[in-house]
Length: 108
Image (cartoon, rainbow, N blue to C red):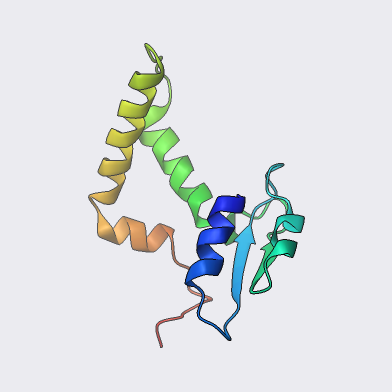
């Protein structure tokens, strides 16, 4: 997490401030940003998958590609997750639909 925040702080222009949103995973602690003057963390409320689009993506991957199977080893897991990810990305409309919200439009 610290490495990621260091990357964010290094590319944030002088005079600007970055805001990082995080879910409630145990390793996502908001105190890690205290060492960076130009980064703040906003924690998502618990049980709010509608605010965290990656949860929708994981659900799609599990339901359509990864459920009800066993894996030979770690490499097999990585291969199948990569194949599932590539299948997910094949439909750009699906990606846009799952990862955007009507109530927030940042394109206008």
